[in-house]
Image 1 (spheres, helix red, strand yellow):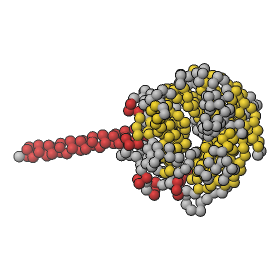
Image 2 (cartoon, rainbow, N blue to C red):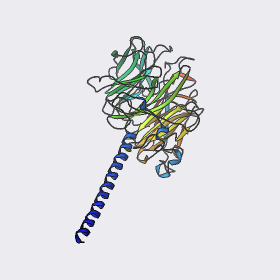
Image 3 (cartoon, rainbow, N blue to C red):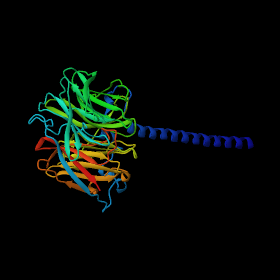
Image 4 (spheres, rainbow, N blue to C red):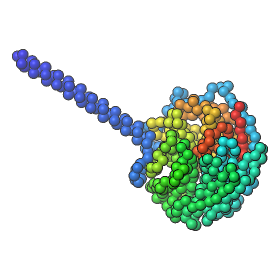
Length: 460
């Protein structure tokens, strides 16, 4: 009897141990699954060539996607009443030789391409010229001296650079990049802001049908240049970078079903990882289909999957306006243009995918972000008939999606001809190696598209 009792007790204890082990194993497996889901949603780049699984829409992540109804008051950033800054505004025409072809090419094209650049001591504007949609002849360089803008030099573009150039500034040198579509080269022009000397050279050969260039400066000072090889419904995006000593190899990634990735804006989340928002295009002329896709990219790696941003009101997203990655919270905020003539706002938390549209700025074509060292994040946008609007928020208050309706808006009236804004070129740390200390904007208005207006906004 005692042996039988001990045997039963031993079996009972063994069952308890086995049950404990099973529960422990299940808990460990669940923990790994949760970690994998969080990792996958926040790390969407692939090391290999893209497959058809590389393109996602917000609907594919509906369980994690944030909608306006999901955002509680604790998730919304807003400024308390009474916290209103005063702006001193001044403006001056930079040039009346801005690139513009009536009826063929509007003057606000290429606001994602930099151009307004600060050395820390001087403010410069690198401007594309000409009135031929098929050829960009030269880049003019203007320096702000007192209350005037003075042309200090030019670079004649070699070959046939058809589209506008992308300009960045590093160590007092303005670098501008374009695609020579006849010679099939990536062209680099440089202009020294200390002795006003410049030159252009060919960096590498580019494949046929290359276009839609962009450029940026990494937090470590690496010059990054990207472009698209336009192939109907199977395009390729290329990029390379220069670490100050030499150029990297070209890193190429398939766009799967899309013909090109154009008008891209980027923002670094840390020294080596950045988010890109680009217009992805497919279909056939004239029935093109435009969507905005965002990808997280590690510098030196292929561009992986894209999350397609989803509108919930009328008008699909057609191309990016701007994007900002918050290094403190690891969240990302972006703005797009829509067919309905509105600017749409989207948000991505650190470990989840992108929201659907959270806010719409109606009758707004251009919207740009200024990340200032004064502690504030500024949004500059145009509203039809109202010229320029500025909204700001202290970056330390941003702990979730930004409720723009709760923030104070300041309307800034500009000269006649700038009531409707077609392009905003901000001074931005994306394009230069010096921090942004104040708000400087270069603006193109609908009625004066051959001009560029400098708007300086001093925050008090």
